[in-house]
Figure 1 (cartoon, one colour):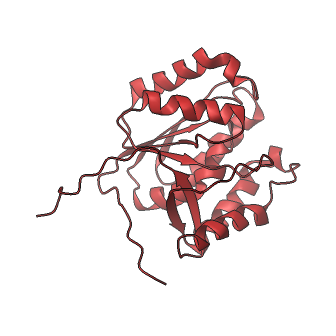
Figure 2 (cartoon, rainbow, N blue to C red):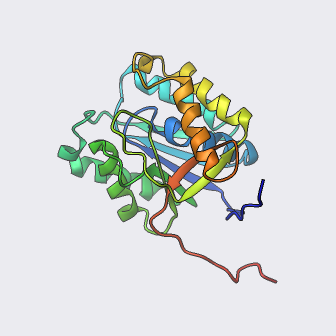
Length: 221
């Protein structure tokens, strides 16, 4: 396998996770979270999900993120905005994202990718960089019917163990989604295999980055 040059985050202390629906974060970035948190047990994880509050889905999300981010501790907020109608609640979405930014200053942000065709995901993707202006934002992709998978710009390699653990945890923690025809173990592993091919590993997750600042001279000496 050829050597792949990779950017690292040596001083990563805190991350913010933003999703429109319960399970978006696990589907889009579950492998990255398993990898990240396993190597940084003291990491602070702050998660905001816009819908599902007061339902079984909120309990699913709490249990899932607790395991995906172990041993790091997760601070999770799940709101009750209406699924599929979030553009009509623009002010509430903006206020929620702004409130999270007022509480935390993360080193890295995970959010939906801007070209996502689901209106709730796309709205959140548009708002996040207007609030988290000084942090790198990784836009995750969500496997679904809409067919909006594109050409990502950033890849996180996943070991076979992590890729399979992600698929297993998605099945374990989100029983409310088992009736969806795309919500299957082989679908999640299939996308991870495709992204792995694109960056010379067996499995990977892919992300989109609109803007990235470099510090090429830092640490040179």
